[in-house]
Length: 80
Image (cartoon, rainbow, N blue to C red):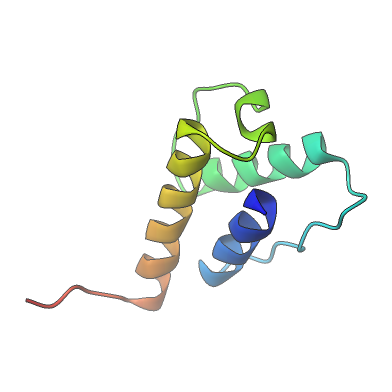
């Protein structure tokens, strides 16, 4: 679910990213997600294995960063 959500957010942020399939190599998928994260100028100073479980602090960090990039791309602003 993490990889699917991350792929959706990357697409919403204006980048083309293929939705991961069930039989895709999870290491390659996670590596591609981290590459996209870095291309947005975000740091990922943790090993990809921290994302493989699909939960935890690092997963939340990646999803938060991707969500911020998606909101920036669509021009979302908070109102008072």
